[in-house]
Amino acid sequence: MLVIAAIVALWWWLVARDESAIFPTPWAVVAGAWELVQDGTLFEHIGASLMRVGIGFGLALLVAVPLGLWMGWVTPAYRTLNPVFQMLRPISPIAWIPLAILWFGVGNLSPVFLIFISSVFPMIVQTISGVHTIERRYLRAAANFGVPRGVLFRQVVIPAVLPEVIVGMRIGIGVAWLVVVAAEMIALHSGLGYLIMDSRNAGNRYDLVVASMVIIGLIGLLLDGLTRLLERLKTVRWRYVR
Image (cartoon, rainbow, N blue to C red; front, side, top):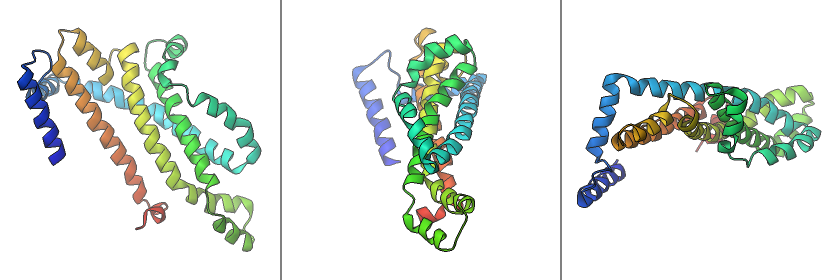
């Protein structure tokens, strides 16, 4: 809290010293945010962005975790598909925007696709890594008791990988939140990304621009915090015991 207060104070001092007529003071940003709250547009834009992230990230999670478990457990699947994913993974999600608009048009499907394509690869890679880094003693202990391969996968591999899956989810949700804002700046008429561009174009309302940026950061922090709550689940708590 002291660091945040110092940053705000420095921000206010710099704007006051330069007597900037464009860059807003912290109080102007708060006033702009309150203006958006009063007319109801802020919650509409937040809801639109969260809806797109929820759908895209949810689809990515449903694909990434089973696929990552399969590739990590079955060596031929890993050797076959890993080169393809490693080739696609470095491509910036922003580079997919023209194709997304071409395939899905200017609507909600485009950002959902971009969120999916940006968050699915980190979760796949993290899940595969989790399977590959399982301590051998777990597997040897199960083999000594004659545990069948299917039971070994369900009761040893999956619980051992879940902490890594949560790490992948944290990475994926952060990337998804970043990408939806970028996509909304280009191809949509709602959401926080659109709010930034619309505020800039409609009278140079930089107070609303900065207010939107602060809100994006706060929601990103909240999403990461909500994802970290999964670390308290009984099935993964063993990894975080101190």
